[in-house]
Image 1 (cartoon, rainbow, N blue to C red):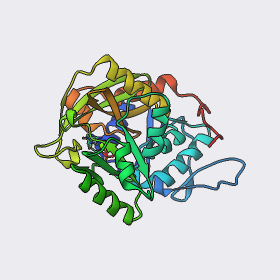
Image 2: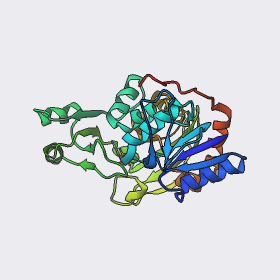
Image 3: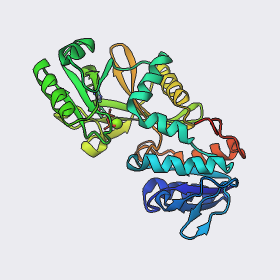
Length: 301
Ligand code: ADP
Ligand code: MG
């Protein structure tokens, strides 16, 4: 296969491992900085230009699009799709999962376990919003946050009210969510490829912190997941339409609940903790499933 990897930095662990895994299997790989790609969108023959030249055609494109470049990145990916290149994850599926609210709405429609969640832009009645999701303690999240930044635990109703008020005062949209205390500061990252969880790990928040993000000092370890957690992760991936993703699950009293679905899951943590060749499995999956012009949502937005 001729593979394009959309990544801003070829030195990143995930990018390096994907290049290694692909080349080891005899594939040709080119890394492209998505922000350097530009296109003529009115042309009848879709193409992409890169640093002054027209790009050759690729069989497969692996998007590793950072949260800060979702909008432009998914537009470039869509152009690849229009040219018939098979994407590891489709542009529409990535956009869907990046919008936390849209993702939760789609997951809830499929009956997938979720923390009780409310959403507001400018509620006239913050107290009613808090009551609606079961009262304090509550987790309040900025819609655009990543790596645990913008996620706050409000222990009391008073604290919840003032945090929500200040976020809304800054014109930020917020999610207000039931606090899953019984998870004990731990969550489970399930790495899904196709219709299987190929690896999973537990992330534990450091002492005195409820957010398990590695960037917030959390630590990762091996975990054995239950069949229910496994099927929840696979159903969440399918609902988002993602072939490869990281599904983050909390163990709650009412079963596994999905917190978020990550369309560009990092490989370093999961490969280190599990000693599994996840990168190799991604390439093997592509060998089996890639097909010219097989983007399901092609042309439908
Ligand atoms: P981000 O996108 O910034 O990673 P998350 O929604 O994943 O935001 O939240 C960050 C961390 O906070 C999670 O990994 C989890 O450990 C903790 N967390 C988030 N929501 C809840 C919740 N409803 N109950 C308990 N812990 C939570
Ligand atoms: Mg997270």
